[in-house]
Length: 218
Image 1 (cartoon, rainbow, N blue to C red):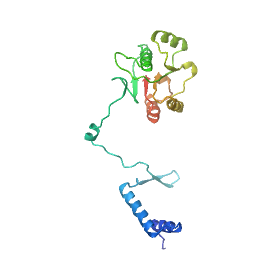
Image 2: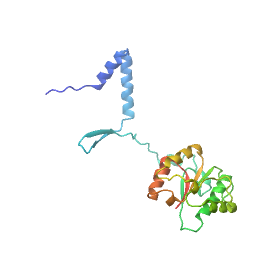
Image 3: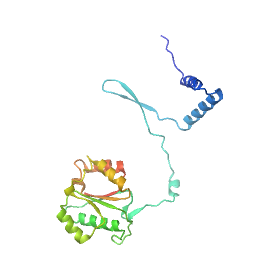
Image 4: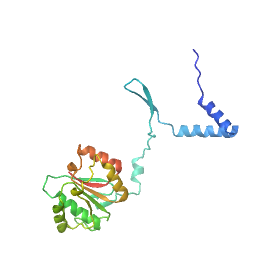
């Protein structure tokens, strides 16, 4: 049985003629497309078989990666930006670990107060940005008492009495907050109360997906 094989370039040429393109313009367009294809080849398709035995062709959206030499990167005139010099980098995740009752919340509030005011923290310079403190544990009475001692008038609090959104099931809420406060430092107190799943998976999903920079207590 004979089978007909269509040449895609012939089909495209006929389509180009049908809209009134001249022969020279058609050849020029085809040559330009072929040159672009050689310089930026498409990613290969892969096949996946469904549970019904059907074969699906899926084209990868990944481009050929750009590789940089160590010498090129070393020569770049770029520096790490710090919210707290040498302690909290900008656009990054910092986790504080420690057993209960050793003062993690007090330290986090002092840190947030310093950044929100732009004043030194532990003798280190800070960059003043908005601070959003998401508190999943402390009752308002305890929070108020600590603020009377530590300060923190410029910190924006989402308190446990106002039911802060969970990181694993309502992470889009934080995406919206980030759009409203793109330079803000987010402090989550504490991570195990902020979600219902595995702590490491939550960090990867919420922070890597949305690019949040934050202080996280565990």
